[in-house]
Length: 145
Length: 395
Image (tube, rainbow over all chains, first blue to last red; front, side, top):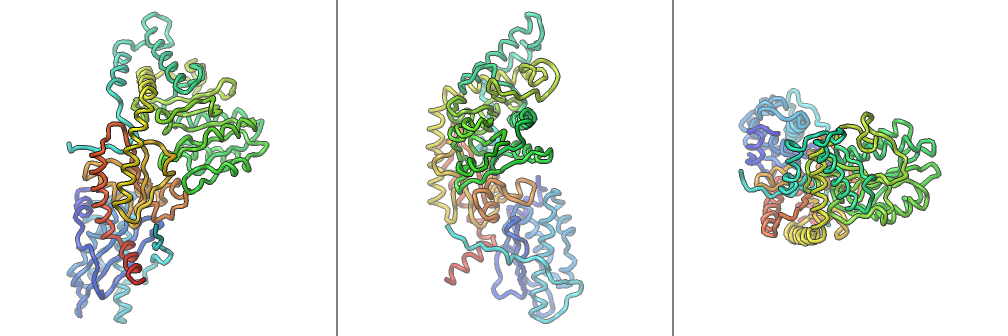
């Protein structure tokens, strides 16, 4: 079902984890539909993404696109990171099954959400960046049994 | 090929070698059409009759009440559509449940578009149909009750005898989709007041491509496939002779071994459930704890998603299935898990493992260790788990 590259990024995901006091953090998706992505960015004073980490709740494609997207923005300027579109992530993974295309959308949205958080915190504007629309506010994951 | 631990017997089972052996002569030796007049086709005709007899015996029915179909889904479609049509002058109301297989649910939805009214009964948190709701749902125009014998996802067994009694007392036809139960649980159509029952060959170590519909004598449902005179003119098409022979053989073996097999599988099932529950935190068991199919286990692991889990289990040679949206091609998780009240995000983290008599306790130990490691790994990359652990630390 998945390409070799998707399987590689799923089985050996790059940049899993958290960043303490991140420059920007974004969480997108919705537990209801089974995909949540969170991206942490560490951005230096020259607006270069020094480090990036992610956490994802979701299917194989969701994990792989998160991993690939973090690889593609690492070391880039925030403006360059804006060029990492869902299409670019998908191509870098040699494609996704049609039902999984929405996972690649989430990766782009998660990066944008983290960049938005960074821009808000530092009161700057990133060209082409709009306020992210999705969040997980309706999620209540604290039920325990 | 790596060693496979096959735990998806609700999806399909291995065709038993003795079943294959019984089938083989009917491809190359006795390949005559059972409808033909000459002696050469007599063995084929006799073999179909023998299989029908074996299956009728296995459910306490008459041979002429057993109709072979191409699948369990076909049997479900036939029972419901043909009963709706045949009894339309009596009424247009059908009662079923929210946790039926799609072969029943989508057929009912189709009938809704044809003007029928369908009541989809709720189930309790264990997945058991509520009998008081069933009684309340019955109207003068109710013509059919269709409730599955046991659920394919969570394994819960329904109170079929009581449902049958209710239907009989009100003079309503009762159909049960027994695809998961037949050959795994003892079934007697008279004891349970079943008027129609669907089953499938490949769920009981028989071949794929053959099922049957039991239709009680006197139920006036008509032909589903029009054409020749096969299956007492009710289901035309040249018989799948090798398939029917294999199904008959599989049914015979299933009945002979039922008690021993069910108790062995139930013991393994309970062992697996107990080991996983003590090994993996934030886990629940879906379906009724004890009143479930002997080979069915269904877990929900909080904070993780089922498809990821399945792919990683596959990496260890373990075959399972999940009610996650990602495995169904839609955005919604399993309708069964939602019907028993699971929140979406927990339903996405479900895992169904269905055992067979070929599985061993050593395999279960390997499965438990694999699940433990995989769930831990997925939780460590889950933002839901991160949030949960932080909230827990703050408390």
